[in-house]
Image (tube, rainbow, N blue to C red):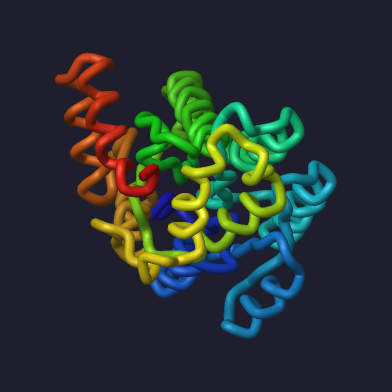
Length: 288
């Protein structure tokens, strides 16, 4: 585990525990002997997590005051110590790049990048003081491969990967290890949340992409039965998280799902034009 020098269980803060990967991670890591501090954006979800037997409190990554209050709560509960942080919370804002307003793009970055960064920066002094720690960022295959109509999310994840790589280099020799997990399609409520974001923020009727958006909305609404090719359950991500948190030498990157491994390989061997052709072909059905 992250620290075997103490008799108390190692502590792990996880964001985005209301469902999906975060929810699975919280329960699995608690069963493995970690003291899990599970957080969620909505108070109702926090209460539900408590009823499930988790130690939970609220953190909304879109709100600096909530992050500050959440870290204060963390310090009170743990005495100012934290062994590991799993930055999992994120959402996807669908839509063509030209249809993203500055405010909509800012909202995406506030949660997926800036809020994640602020939380990380606030807990790092604890890890530095104790001389050890693990930071695991939940990125995506879209952190290194672009697909149409996902530009806001891709922007946030590309940036997260660059920021994380830099942080890993800056923490070299500190005893604090930094890892990225790169899931591909995972069975969760991610698509439902993305559909709400699309309806709230994209003017589909008056867009140059109006005809394509009919396909995009059908996919998001589950017209395909909610089945995504090559999708795995959240446990596939949690298995990589276990290695990142408990192995003496965690990896810098963990690829999850076949699309992630395949796109990573192709990105190294194909030209940009060749890679574009692969990426466009992989999404052809949703654009026609």
